[in-house]
Image (cartoon, rainbow, N blue to C red; front, side):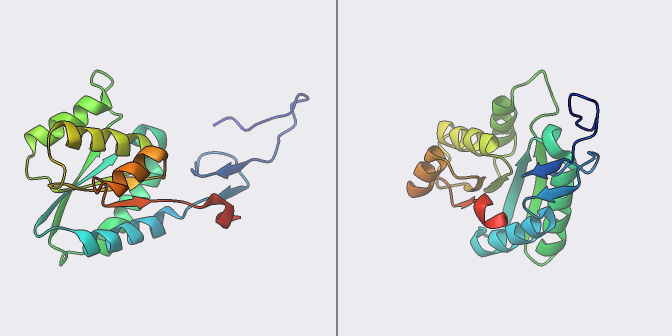
Length: 173
């Protein structure tokens, strides 16, 4: 990662917001602790999971795979072996020949046992929710979405989303 410079070539101090990139030359990161987020996701899953949960974690790891890895490691550690949850990670950004929408749809078709999904971006939340609606699986699959938007709040009010992970950046600092 090339550090930012001013018009004279002098380095500019960099602060990253929202998503951390440990390979950048930033002096500070302001945002969500991904390890703590993984712990909180595990707590949420334990509280709303169906019996014998078959969980799918949907993430576009092209954007920030290190943050995803930290979150998933913390989630796994916090979930433990006693939670009676089997889970898989679906990386939607890896295959450039197939759209993320189609990857998600095909996963639901090939793995009909999936009964819970965690989405790690707003885009994947909307894709998963639309696939669940299109495949007539609303009420059969619990979805934990990421980020508030008019559409995710609508889905939450209709019971299509079970929960939304939302951030309050003004509370961070």
